[in-house]
Amino acid sequence: MKIIKAAFSKTFPITQYYEKIYLEAELNDGDDARQVLYDLKKQVNTFFYESNAAAEKQMGTQVSDAPIAFGIMLDDIKSCKTLKVLESYKMVVKNKPDLQAAYDEQFKKLSQ
Image 1 (spheres, rainbow, N blue to C red):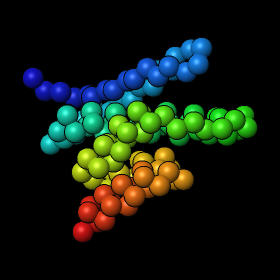
Image 2 (image 1 turned 90 degrees about the horizontal axis):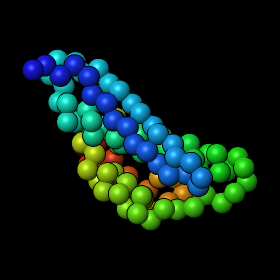
Image 3 (image 1 turned 180 degrees about the horizontal axis):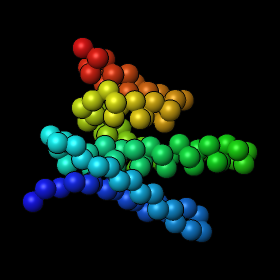
């Protein structure tokens, strides 16, 4: 069997409705399908938090921290294996000292 595409979607609860975010990637020869799925998952999560923070800021509301979600993201940041994946968190970690520290630490490890 040859896997040619990988996809990831996640449904997020938003006040009175749900938001489904879906990404699909075409695999090149030599790509690890599992790693591509991990990368897609991280991109979906990052997009959700960035887009909702921007929307809340635009509406003039306080952006709330979701400790469980950011706890998961902290583990995701620490488990990044490439700078490309890690950089998808760059905007999310701003103004969040714990996340920024984890980002900076992983960035140093991967830059060596």
